[in-house]
Structures are given as structure tokens and as C-alpha cells.
Length: 95
Image 1: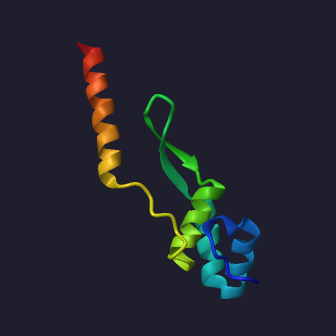
Image 2: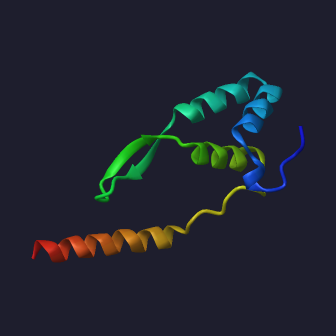
């Protein structure tokens, strides 16, 4: 099994084979990660729970086993600005 050089090279088959080589604890980690529900927002911006997607699983795998390939993510300030903007727009609609 070749070590991935980029995040896009990490496919589900690689993830499965990798954790199976590592042992029971890592297999259980993958099972738990697949079953995880992720916080998200619906089309109206309301918080919801959804099943983890392949991208969620791949990113969690990369953070745990290949942190140098893991996505950097968005900054909390950028997310805070989006939330603030949504709240301000909602406040305008109420008036």
C-alpha cells in the first residue's frame, strides 16, 4: 500500500485497508466515524444533523493519520461573520 501524497489520493478503499492493518482500535474508530452524525444547516440555515459523508470521513482520517495532508479548514472568524450576517438579515426581515 503506497502512502498518499495528497488528500485527493485518499480513497475509501485505502482508508479501509489502512485501519484494518492498524488493528481493532483503529477499525472501531472508522466504524464510529462512519456512524457519526455531523452538525450542518438546512437550506434555510437551521441547524440539523446529517450522516457523515465520504468527505467528512476522509478529512477525519487525514487529520488522525496524515495530518500534513489534512485540510486546513475555514477560520472561525469567517464562520462567525456568516452567522452574524444571517442574524442581521433575519432581524431586518422582522422589522
